[in-house]
Each structure stands twice: as C-alpha cells, then as structure tokens.
Image (cartoon, rainbow, N blue to C red; front, side, top):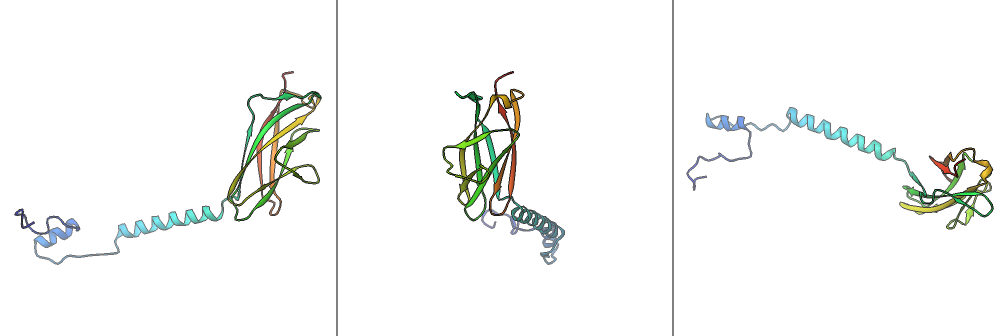
Length: 179
C-alpha cells in the first residue's frame, strides 16, 4: 500500500469493527466462537446426521419394470397372449444375490426368460445379480386368451431376495386384444 500512497491495512482479511478499532488506536479482537460459527456448525451437523440416516436406511434392492410397447402383445399359434417385460434389478448390497420373480393378477400364466436357467419349486424364475451391479433380464408372460376379461389387466411383480427376504413390489399391465 506504501507504493501506491495509501494507508496500511486498507485491504486485509478483517472485520469492519476491527478496522474501526485500529483507526482509534484500540487493539484488534478475534473471537473464534461467534453466533455465526455456532449456527454454521449446527447446520453442518444436522446435514451430516440426515445423510448418515439416509445411508444407513437405504434400500439394498431397486427394481424397474419396463413393458414392451411395440408390439403391445403377441398372439401365439396356440391362441395364448404373450407380453414382454424387461426387468432391471439393482443389487446395492456388498455380496452377490439371487432374486425370485413372482407374478400376481393373472390366472394360469407362464413366465419364461431366455437368460434364466434356475427356477423355484413354484416355477418362479431366479435371477442372479452381482454385488453393486444392475442386471437386465427380458421376460415373456403368456396366458390363454380366455383368462383375459378385458384388454388390459393389472399385474403385480414381486421381486424377493432369497436370503434376506427383502422384497420390492412393482405394478404394471398385461395387454391383450380389444374385446
């Protein structure tokens, strides 16, 4: 500041009150604990607690079901109606998991996949998902045309982890021809 002919301390990391104190010859005051510091500490602590709670209570399973849109349904040579679904299972746990996929809402249905070779005793397919991975599996659900009372039937997929029993329930529709 001496080079440009200005008073010393004009530009500093300081408060306006300390600047005024220096002008009248008093000593600077530095307080570490101020109301602002306490408020900021409280807000930071609250955000930390909320984030910790969310991390400890997060779901270890995330499921998304996408119904094939084109074609809406396929009529098989046997007369059955078939819909296609892509089920995406996200395993957020730290170990590989197996999930069974059950369907409710249709009578006398058949659920099959080209990528699944393992089935439960009840005929529900079992999908293996590695830890921290997303697994997409294409499923085909077919039912006789006589079982459809309307051109659209609400169905529910229940995805259940076989070891812990954690479940995720997703609803979608089963489409058929207009009646």
